[in-house]
Length: 194
Image (cartoon, rainbow, N blue to C red; front, side):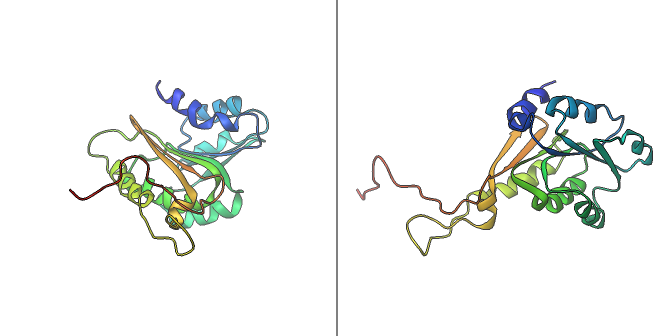
């Protein structure tokens, strides 16, 4: 039940807008209708599942794709079939390899300001949170600017606004526009030798 607060916090800015949403893991189709109700009639819903029977949930505003989320070739084909996404919800196979491939393949297909959400990251043996912790290091990279004060952001910093961790959920938010410079002027006590 705690997921609903997380959804509201990160998805509310898209309500009532022309939004493109992908949910991986269709299963019984109920959440596809929930997303349509939540985001409104201008929403475009896409579902991905490995089970062919999930095609039965396709309608005039919901398109279902059958494929394996760990297959890079599947994502290549998918990206040719749908516009850039605003929201990606990974509720698929819940295996670290599947989640990693999905993030790596689909992050470039997420629009500026978009939200990537991975659900059901249960158990201390799930390696996906560790993978995301490794990605966080890229947020803290620094490369001295050649054109002025501060640091020049690396490509990752240009486009990744933030990464959030919740119980069983990880969220990555893209920036609305690329970050051009990282400046952190000193304030307060200066370090001085004793």
